[in-house]
Image (cartoon, rainbow, N blue to C red):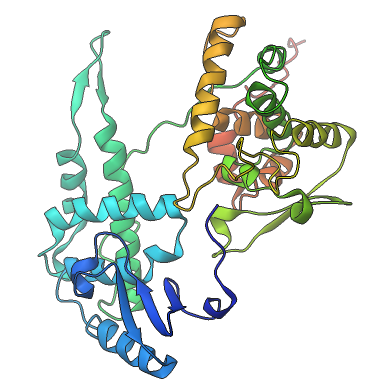
Length: 367
């Protein structure tokens, strides 16, 4: 769980903090060279002084001579506003982009360069049936191109260029959406596994599955649920962590008997009954750490799935994301599925999460 900002830091720009009588900027990893090789840069003792120093530093970015300088400003101003995991992925993408495009003038990048970049980052291998498949480097290339495209969108906003050089002009084949649908009997098999401990462990994962099947909540949102703050008389109140700083979208999952029972089971399964979290570690702490990862939960899920494969009739493992897709697939309508998953666009819900076969009545015999 990312640490909540102190009250005195709330009005400050992203990554600013007031400590030890002065204002500091927490430098994004990998960008220390732009801030005198420091991880925490002192801006000034007073707020006006801090803003002047900030303006002097950022002011040098008011004009970008090449893609590398554009990516520097993007890393300083845009990436820190994203979720922790996304920040890590974006910074990794910048490293690859700088190698190829760093010294290029902004106006030099054209659509055919993007295709060439994707091909260069892709390795193909022959499959057993004689076909050809693309390896993971292609998926990484797609993400890198997405970051570069957004950086160019910001370049237009910042006045570096008049138009985006390759928006809507590049059509790269995206990765085929996963189609694993978790059947009801598979969920039943998982819930029938006998826990070895009365609290936590398998019992906690089973409670987690019960809640997830009914709500479709993402792992990050589920593991951040706090009973006192989110589980209220009218239902479960959730503000999606992923879009908290963008759309700020909120969802209320209204109570029904099944959801009440699932949440009650989750509370009863906690290894520390007094923990502030609905799902907690043996120490009562949140599984999601400051960097946004939940390694402890990932290990717990992996151990649980190993038991599922060894002790049940389930033959194909599934992920937590597949359970989220099951909730969307089992919804009565696309709109209900979109609302469950808190998507802004139902096309995302339809393309990635609605995995059941479409039911169609056959035509009647003519005559």
